[in-house]
Image (cartoon, rainbow, N blue to C red; front, side):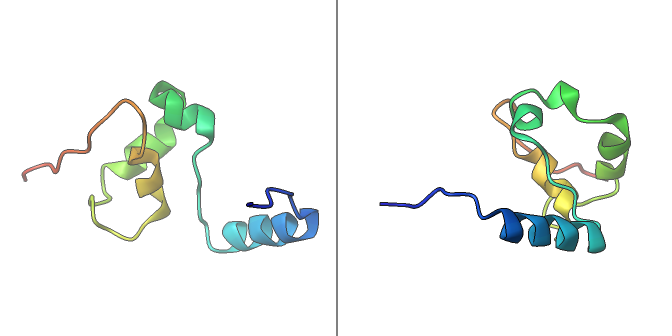
Length: 72
């Protein structure tokens, strides 16, 4: 059985580390409703390739879209 107990101290360290590394993670609500994603993030995504290692690519993972590579 998987233990889903939240370790508050580990969560705090994880949040601090993400902030240090400028890692932005979408909320579940943003993944369900991509229209809730801030325009700033949508604008930044224009410069991020589909296969780039960039936390903004997490915003492409939704229940409503299929990422399509843009042809330049």
